[in-house]
Picture 1 (cartoon, rainbow, N blue to C red):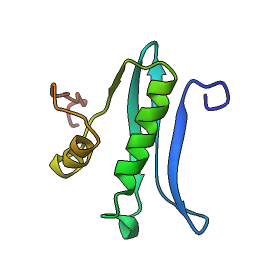
Picture 2 (cartoon, one colour):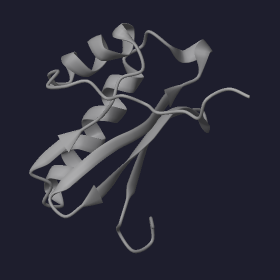
Picture 3 (tube, rainbow, N blue to C red):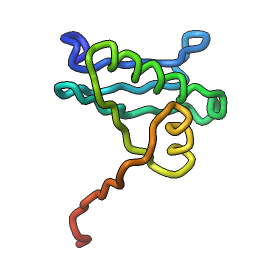
Length: 99
């Protein structure tokens, strides 16, 4: 998918070590930012914000009119708000019943 342009990745790298990375998946003129993660030792340095901003810029440059993502918790949601995202809805996750 990377090779044919159906997705793109961004990473924050220091001294050859990937500290934070993520990707986006486009469908038509909509793109979803997914999998943004930062090593615990590299948190609170703005890396997730930078990676997210780079992904949004690339998605927009490739024609995305709408870019969205899902935040796992309120701390993550605050990071995305600083990148210009705003809450417009709530996603629900369905799981099979236990046992």
